[in-house]
Image 1: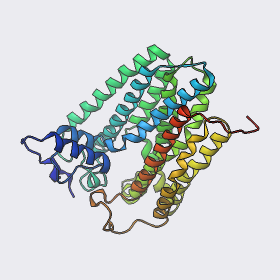
Image 2: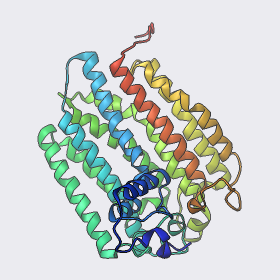
Image 3: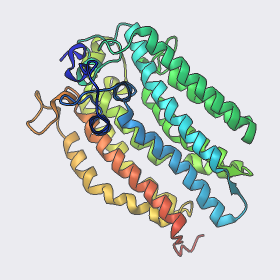
Image 4: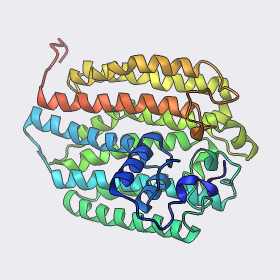
Length: 366
């Protein structure tokens, strides 16, 4: 279906009630798509264009970093938590995520990759191809979000030192050059590593960095290492999306890691990424880095089993009756996102319970 004629884009000039607006926003956040049976206002369109439905992955990253800081403060009594900086950092990484999604659409369209026949324009409205905004408006939105993030960076650096700038600029580099020339990391099989570094060490590490005073570099390194399990979950979502796009990406010369591996091996690799989350989390508990409540994430294993079954066979030729047809031709990404949203949420909940109901395992080596 061409996004240029999406029914939800035809809200016209009639007044939209608050109830209808909220219902549309809720559906967008649940489905990552524009509702077909509800009028869509400007806020709803930007929620679709920035792909706000996947922002929870970023919120979990920031919250994980903050809760690790709180747990350290409770255990040691040697650090204080800068809550205004934490909130500002989380706002900053969410805005950066929004800018990243718009950057991807802008540069892929400019390079001739995003067309009305390419996967990106089939599963959800493309900002420009849908006719919702012009290319100039898309560019200005990217610049505006980046400038806001720049101001947040400078303020946080003023409060917590120049290391904040290093983290922020690293994130900006990975965000822009994920698709932009001359690096175009996605084209070179490095897009998955880009996402791993961004949603793990950079987002979790930077939130922790601005949360604690004074900063201990060894503690920051430990937090960065602890970010690996969650970073694998987020990477599995992108990996699934790239599996869905193997054929069109191959024809365009875009060598994502699934293109390089081929579909069967790529599906097995993504299964391994999702499975690995659990033993790594258990190792962090056994090492005494975090309290045992993070093992609440194990409650996501039944969902993982169903997701692994989905990855155990190729994508069907047509969507089953139960599958949301507007999400087609995406398939594997939905399975991975479902698992990541649940496991990431449970991990975050476990870190919160660690703070509220502290428990330490009687481990003889600690």
